[in-house]
Amino acid sequence: MVKSPLRLTIVQYAGDFREAAERLSKGGPETYRAQRHTVEYVENLAAEIGSVTTITGFTDQAYDVTLASGAKAIGAGFVDHFDGRRLAELTAQSRPDLLIVRGPIRPVIWWAIRHRVRTLLLLADSFNTQSAKSRLSGALLGLLTRAPNIEWVANHGNRAAEQLVRIGVPRRKVLAWDYPTFDRPENTPPKTKPSSPAKIIYVGLLAQAKGVDDLIVATKQLVDAGRDVRLDLVGRHDDGRLAGLIAHHRLEGVVHQLGMIDNAEVIVKMRQADIVVVPSRHEYSEGMPLTIYEALCSRTPLVVSDHPMFAGAVIDRESGLVFRAGNTAELADRMTELLDNEALYSRVSEGSAAAWNRLQIPLKWADLITDWIADTSTSRARLATQSFANR
Image (tube, rainbow, N blue to C red; front, side, top):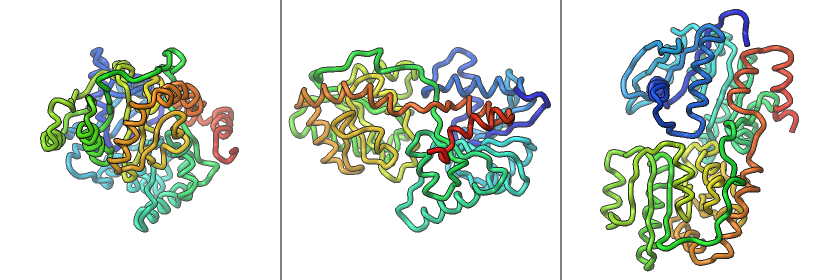
């Protein structure tokens, strides 16, 4: 790929790289779609370009290790508080020739600008512009991206990339990217009707901003209305907050926390369910949730919130049902509609294939990084054809 040795540093908020690399090297499970693909790609880069360091903010403990692959992993050890300045310090210590910033981490971006380091912003974020403070934050990021060394600003999904333009990122620098395709809805037949008792599933971060609490309350409303339902929550166990909420609503026999499962089992679990719910509130910084791709592949009807990043991805009553984020009564009503209306249920399941195909993006995660590192006339031209300047 590159003839002369280079030092590449990748900086990210969370997603402990050391833990993931060691788990996968031992044949352990993936915890999200394409995790093995991304981890192995980064590790292989260490041999190809000379030096690769991944710096992660939130890790169980601080560490600085070299993995068996030769890739270096640094954990900042953040637990309760994110410190962008500390990440900038760790970035400086790695002395990068190339920098990939996997989040709008302004202190790291500002360090890169001051030191004129070739930088790729590789995001999976949305930007809340409802308050003056959030609009100012977005505008500041847009201003920073005008620096010549910030060469590309890529976001996961078309809607998220379009938002970059709205906050002031130059169109010529904006790219939409996606992970490679591993599953397709065409491989699975559509569904015609729900089962009984009805099975509802949520997969993702068990956080209030992700709408999990709203889903539990909506499930309680279904039970109170005489519905025989089961709700499975797939995700890392929290500190007991959700267990308390489940007990408060007397849903111990209805809501089940399954913990983390192998990502290879996610679509299987979704296929076994009758409804997949993605209830994210607007304040959660979504890019394009992998859960939506997986649900569409499972052909199990979706119920999603009206989060701005979902617009166009899930079309109401065509490829899913949409409710106003945070409105538990409306969420319960949408689930009820699917359970009671077989024609609607069948139509939404049938529409999942077309919805999945609309979401596909030609520029894939590893190809984007490979072309950016190579920095040849051919690779630059290939990326430029995907730029929003051409839309």
